[in-house]
Length: 139
Figure 1 (cartoon, one colour):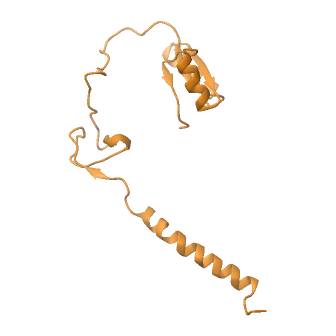
Figure 2 (cartoon, one colour):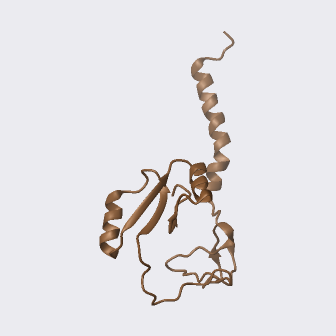
Figure 3 (cartoon, helix red, strand yellow):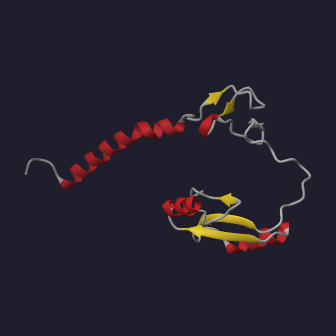
């Protein structure tokens, strides 16, 4: 035998793995959310999310920009007629939540589903599905 036992090998492998993981663990302890000064934030330094938009917090509300090609809907309009059409992953929404939403807001919810993102895109591209709300990512 060359002086290395199974126990010594496992101990050294564990130490090696820990030493490789240590920088990642230590990095996670630091703040990785970039801070920027943004005209859209009500505070001078707001955390920034995907797309460079300031992230809203209860103590740091954010006013998002309004773009010319995406104007806000005027307030005070009557609700649209018909069901709220929801396009989501198959078996990914609790029917009790839908029923509670329908009861609370007096609206019927119509759910269309897909099992893969490719199927979702194909249905949208072909016009096979109409929706008001689309959930393309697992959230």
